[in-house]
Structures are given as structure tokens and as C-alpha cells.
Length: 239
Image 1 (tube, rainbow, N blue to C red):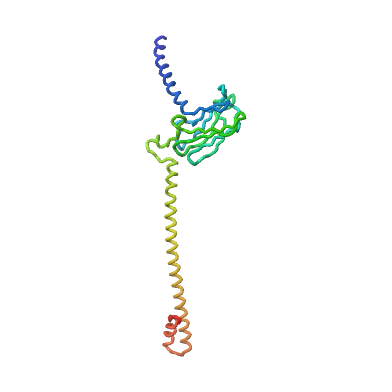
Image 2: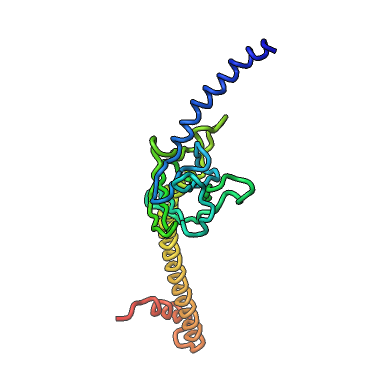
């Protein structure tokens, strides 16, 4: 028994050291801030955070004495900002009072599609007070979003964000090429129509000449020379 205890002590110590090392990292991945009688702890629901994977803005809300806030309702929203893009999402409880989950844990679900820094802006009212707090990812707050290709194996296939960027870059080129092709086609069609029109006019002129020649031949005024004179008259420009 004593030998088993002696063997267990190093294992327990190792686990304790590991937890001591992991715990600060977990805490540092969220930002804590007070707002009057309540405290917010904000960060990504799943960290590290990668593009293309469903995630959430996690907002843990507690009273000043540490008691969880479980009656938030729909009084708060979170605006997610990435550069010039932004969207407003509702905060929903990720727990059941007296049931599963951690009381006070609220989420706004989304799938980040671009790597880099994000800002979460809490807005609304809580306990009768106006809330307007912004939390931005950084090395000292919560994690920035990483490109999923950084963990891709064995092949680093392009992410949806990279594909979208390529499409955005190539579409203007394709549009220019299509316009040039259409312009060229319009020019070719114009020349073809002009050729057809000229050919039709020539046929009409020839047909008219034949008709005139036949009429002149039937009149008998000029014998066999009359058709040739009629054609020459049709072809001669008006003066």
C-alpha cells in the first residue's frame, strides 16, 4: 500500500503542475471587465479559433459577488466586427437553470471566415444600466482567428476564404475578357451584316437589270444589243 502511494505521488504532482500551467493560459484567452454591478468575461467559445469552423462569442456574466446572471433575456446583443465588415448577433443562454451547462454562460454563434483580429461589442441594457463595451482580440486578451491551412495535413488545400479571395480577384479579369469578346463579336457581326446588305443590294440590282433587259427584248426595239444596254444603264451611276 505504501509502495503504491509512493508511486502515485509523482503522478499527482505532475498533474498538478500541468493544471497550474494550463489554467493561466485558459484565463488569458478571455478578457475580464467590470460594468457596474456585473462582470463580463469575453472570448471565443473554442480556442484556438480557425477559419471555416463553427464557433461562438462567449460572454460569461456574473454579479459583483460572483453569482452567475441567469436572467439576461434579450437585453444584450453582440456586434462582431472584422475590418469594415460587421454583424449583430443575439446572445443566447448556453445553459439550463438547474440543468446542464454553466450558469451565466451566454453565446453568439458564428463561423469566422477570415483570419486576424476581431472585435466583440456588447450593447444593450443590464440591471437597468446601459452597456456599451468593446473587446478586441490580441496577445493580451483573447485569441485571434488563425487560417485553417496552418493545421492542414497532409495537403494544405486552400480555405474557403482563400478561394473567395481568388474568385474576387479573377472575376474582374473575366468580366473584362467577356466585354472584349463581346465588343469583337459585335464588330464581326456588324461587318457580316454590312456584307449581307451589300450582297442583297447587288442581287436586287442584277435582278432589276435582268427584268429591264427582258422587257426591252420583248419590245424588239434594239434586237440582241438591247439587254446589254439595259444592264449598262442599271450599273451606271445617276448624274
